[in-house]
Image 1 (cartoon, each protein chain N blue to C red):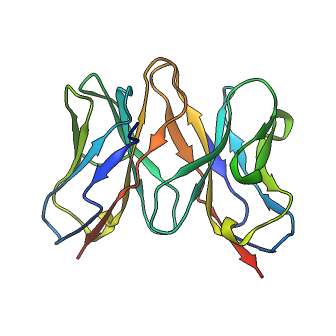
Image 2: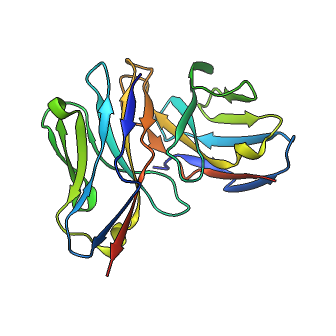
Length: 113
Length: 115
């Protein structure tokens, strides 16, 4: 049973560019959440997707957007990259029916130069 | 606002000594509490969780934590540290209602184990 997978593992982008990160949830899960973990910090909630819609959002600008596909996989898009967007981006999946625990993927390390 | 506070960004213990990592939370509703471990360049691995029931929770690798509502604490302990325990540890609270849970994380505690 595959866990949560994310791609790519590492990514280097230039300021002003756009980036797309991908996540496949654990088998049987239908909810995907994204978190940003800056160096030396705890993960910060970006947003959560369920039934292909953004269900809730953290305190992140509109440059951060996402999508969920019918197979429950998800993408995180960041436009107009800033140096401060450099971080580890974590995807977590869960099952909507009162599933409190989220399962995390290994993350995508984004470096903006 | 709900929050999680981890006292001590860095903790050092000798191999074989007691490990104690502190976590306090603020929440207006009964919380669900978690401890995660993160090794360098890796994602988050669940150590243990408290949802309901017994307040002393046992996890993997010999770790345990006790939920103390009166102290709003969920400290992580291990009787005897091992070199392989060196990592970053995050306490988290899960907030929301059915179908809207999200995590609020503390800032983490880096555990160093001395030989």
